[in-house]
Each structure stands twice: as C-alpha cells, then as structure tokens.
Length: 115
Length: 114
Image (cartoon, rainbow over all chains, first blue to last red; front, top):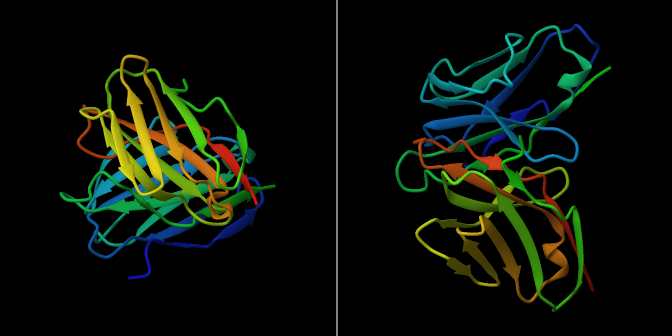
C-alpha cells in the first residue's frame, strides 16, 4: 500500500474557474477526511466520510464546495467559481474504524493557487 | 476561534539537547490529543498521542505530557537530532464526536542544529 494519494499536487487556476481534487485513501480505511491548511495555520476540518456517506461538513465548506465518495473508495473535492481566498493546501486523510481509528494518515496534499 | 494554540512559531535547539514544544487548548471537551510532524512537501505524519485518562505517554525519544487542569500539553524530544527538524502540530479531538474531528494548532517549526 502506498499510503494516501492526492492528485494533482499543485493546481494553478484563474478566479472563477472550477477545480477538482482527487484522493485515494489507504484501501482498508473506511473513513476519509478533507482538511484545508492556509499559510501559517494548522489544518482545518472540512468534511468526513464513512464509506460513501458524508456524515459531517464544516461551516467552512461553502456551497461552492462539494465532496463525494461515490463507491466508498476514492473521493473528490470540487470547488466551483474559485476565489482567491480558496488558495490553500487541501489535505486528505484516512483512518480505519476500530483499532487505529484515532490516528489520521494524511496525504501530501493538493496545493491550490487562485490567481 | 482558535481552540488549540501553539504560541511559539519556531524553536531552535542544539543537537543532543532537549526540545520542548508546547500546546494550549481552550475546550474542556477535548479528550484525545496527538502530535504530528510535517516535512516540507509532505503531509503531516503521526508522531505520538495521549488520551485524557493519562498524563504522560512515551515512545522512544518522544514523550507527551498532558496537564488537564492547565489545559496544556507538551512534547519532549530527547535527545534532539537534526532529522527532527520539521514543523510540529498539536491536535485535539472532542469526546462528543465518534470520528476524528481534530482541531490543530498553527504549528511550531523546530530547527535542530548539528
């Protein structure tokens, strides 16, 4: 297993464009998380899936953001009509249910730059 | 509303000496705490954790101390090595959730000088 994979690693886009990030979690992990990290800050929780069900969304996740995990495996995070304030590192993490559930394994992140 | 605070943005120590990284939290509902280490261009990696029923947890050179009354935890690295140079994040999770809704501090950049 190669850990949590995120793609693309870096995306530069113009304001108003849509972007999509993909996350492939560790295969046996049921839980998948998206966090966002801005410069000089720690990661902030965005949303959480258990299998294909999205069970929690942060108030930070405006209606321009949508996340899916259609088959309970990979997940996508789409940002519509990007704004400069969306520029950040988007981190995906996964964890199992049960033993080890309290530790998140993070991917390397997808850095978004909105011009 | 920063519920987890790391007030020292950076720390520099000499190789072989002790590194002490501090973290304060405000939410008394937090019952599980972790430290993550982050190298440039990589995601955070788990280092060590502690639950609120303990006041100390040790793993090799790394020890985490929890003072619930002061809402404070610290990470001790002894002896510090140049490879420990990284950004360290403290994270906390509240008891009321059954999933890992972690609140992270803003990080402390540790530099261990050879």
